Structures are given as structure tokens and as C-alpha cells.
Length: 249
Image (cartoon, rainbow, N blue to C red; front, side):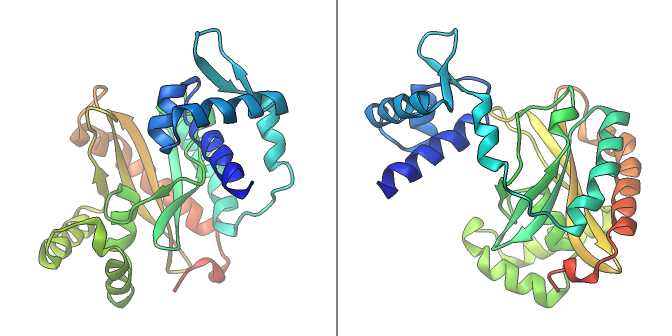
């Protein structure tokens, strides 16, 4: 029963990343066999969390999934402080922004303006775990972490890369020199992200990023246009987040 519940939750989380999902998509993304995906979808349909879409062989979530989070009220001072400045930035520039905080070896998205952005690539990234060395948020956070903390975090992230420590340190120096980290786009994910640190009371508390379609502009153009507003937003978050216990240090 526990195994079935775990697999059903995996399906729901995966479906949350797309408007419509096929059995093939779900099997590939979750590693669950197609027959098991079909059986689990039938249960979720019966319970009212999933419905068949107009496209044959495809499925989508229903509004009932919102009830699963109805009793969840956990947030943080930093997260609450970020909402208004981030919403204002997305209203100004259109592109979605996200706030990531370090949790158990990864950067976890705690707030995102995807719902209000007309240019968002995903439906949501809330609670998504991003690798420290494989994301702009992670690299920005590492680059601005105190040396002893960074060494500890890098030790836990050693499996993420085969690059020598010297080249990683040079990367962090470059990030600090330019003031931001970049995640380049790929053919599969044609967006890139620009990320900077967020400080409150002189402490590193989070990383803030903006995500842009690669075909819309170059990274250099994005830096020219948005680094200033992104920094202003990070500064506003820091000023609003005055609780010192939000830092991990």
C-alpha cells in the first residue's frame, strides 16, 4: 500500500509540471511501468484528482489537487518578504522569478511568480529541488557562502561534477566578480536563468533568479536589462526580511 501511495504521489508531482501528460510521458519521467501508470491513473480518476483530456491517451489534473495543500501553512520570513518585490518585478519585466533557499543539500524553490508571468516555461517550480552545482541558484548561493560553509557544501555535492576543485573555485570567483551566476539553456530546456544572492541583516539567506527564453535575447542582453532590477528586488527582500534566524549560518 505504501509503495502504491508513493507511486501515486510521484504521478501527481510529475503531472503538475505539464498541462497534459500521456502514459508514455509519465512512465518515462517516473520510472513506473506503463501498466502500473494506467492502474494508478484509474484510481486517481476515481478519486477525482485526475481526468482524461480531450487529447486521446492523455490526462490532466483536476482542481481537487488544490485540496491536498489546503492545510499547509508553513512559510518563512524570507519567503513572505519576497512575495511583493518579486511579484512587482515580474509585473514590470514579464519574466518569471524564483526564490530558492538551501535545504538538505540542494536549493529548494520556496516562491515563484510563474502564476503571474505570461512568459513562464513551466506550470510551477514550487518545492523543486535544484542541484548546487547544476543550477544558477546553487552556484550563486555557493559563491557567496563563507569559505568554510562552501567547503562543507561542496563535499556533499561532490557527486554532481567531476571538475577539479580549482576550476570550481575559479567559477565562484568569476561569479563574485560579475555579481551573478548563469544557467545556460539546452535544446530540451531552451531557457536560461540569471541568479544572484539575497542577504538579510548581513547574512546570506537565499538566491533569487529570473528565467528567460533563449530565443528572446542573449545572456549579455539579459544581464544589461535585468541585473539592475534583479538586484533591486533582492535588496528589497533583504530589507523586508529582518529576522536573523532565517540564515543557515
